[in-house]
Image (cartoon, helix red, strand yellow):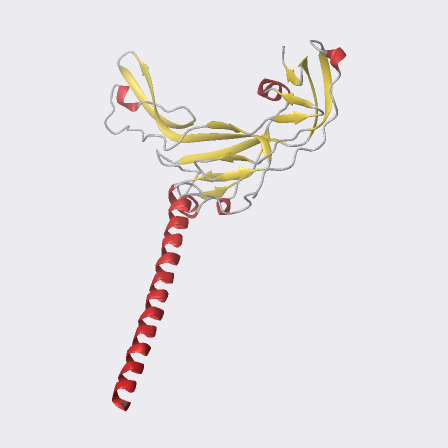
Length: 240
């Protein structure tokens, strides 16, 4: 009987050990799965884990518009407001601004021909130059742009009770340079660039760039106090 009791006790302890081991293995598997998901999101989907607001900003109280100004040109002053930061999804950059403008330039071959006499030199250009159409493409191949210039906006933009059309912003608010730092980018992109005078660049020596080198700069329309004029259409402020 003592042997049977000892055997039963050993079996019970073994079962408990197996359950503990299974729980540990399951916990490790779950943590590994979430780790892989975060890694994939950062490296492939451009997640930016820094400074991401959990919830949209609350809309501040807005004064009512004057019905008597319907269809008339009005001038409105106040602080521009948008509910969330504007984001460049390709580079994972988020900025507290109304508009984010990305300018991408590549150092490319350029062809200049006079009759059948063609000369080639390289220049910075934000427009892709198709080297396959060159008179002598061999030795003057231009790489493809990995991504181009783009405009990013968030909205709606509100100002003193009005919802402001994007055309009004574009026509009356001058963008300003926005210095960008590589540590704001996802790790895989940060490894591809370096900083130079507030821009993101590739290549080691920008004073002697090689064909295919990139130069990425940004401008923003900041969320600041502004005075805008436009035509009132209900609660909208439009150019015409």
